[in-house]
Length: 425
Image (cartoon, rainbow, N blue to C red; front, side, top):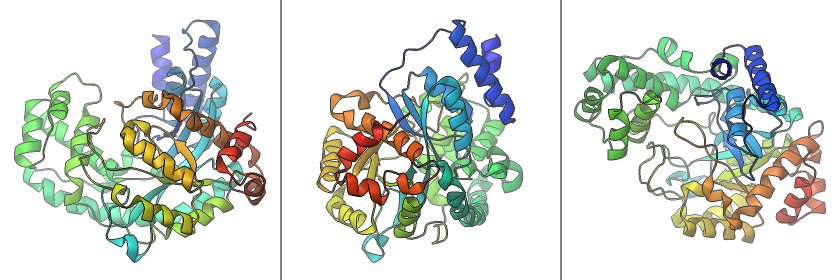
């Protein structure tokens, strides 16, 4: 019972409670009162927390990563670095090596990519990029960069909420942004508010109105005209499903966004070179987030759709022109053919390869089984290199993986990765 109470406190509203709870759990584990989980070679550099969208605080994310046997873990919130200090503190308590990052959006390539779906399912010409291994000395500059991004996103979120209300009017649901959506976020603590928060508020409203099970499924299909897959229908038919609203969100995310989405502008999504240059200045590692053409989705929130696979050579030329030094991808999301191709192209263009499992739903595992294959050993080395870079550049961004000295000493990124992995404390 005490263990359950402590695990619940990992999502307490008070930071001190969260860290106290994880400290007690770690002590219980050390004393043998909680059976220890063997540490594996698994790594994960892409864990979202409630500072963007997730069921978990940074502290709870760390505890779950630790209990999953991860050797390293990295926080990666959308448009926010606010959870990084807590994530690192919790990781130190449980003895887990960690790294910090943020996921942002940029405008890529001007006219050449303006009409193309890149790696963003919702808007042409816009690309997700990750800033890995953000050192402590670079966090304030990143927060300053993100402030106008968050403000612009907030205005667009309000407009999208109004547009969504025009859709849900037929089922008698009208969301209020301040009452229903903002409380689901950590915006008051520097967290971001995303389309997922809007849809999560709708998930709760639909569940309150129709209950769980057949009535809600009927509302989704008959009233809102949404496609519900057999897998989603099975989840939503289970009235005891502990993550029910997250599964409703999965249906909404995969089917409804296009009916209320409003394109982000250049304030939210500046030119890629601006963000890449900022990343290097603060000692982070800017990476293009490869998506690839999508078939089945583990979380039920992505429909089959084509992205950058048809023009990868052109895209990589643009990445080189802009100055990206890395590409991040998820082995569980892509086919073996896609993975071989993206890896070969990274080697051809001397781009650092990073990986991580995108965690924002209780259905997702912190462990990427696919990444255990021997051909992905470089991704495990990369995780330690991120930590080594963040540690080396903690007080001086110039000492990072992307600093001039490192690039001169190790022009080959694979060799540089090994060198920085050795710096991991």
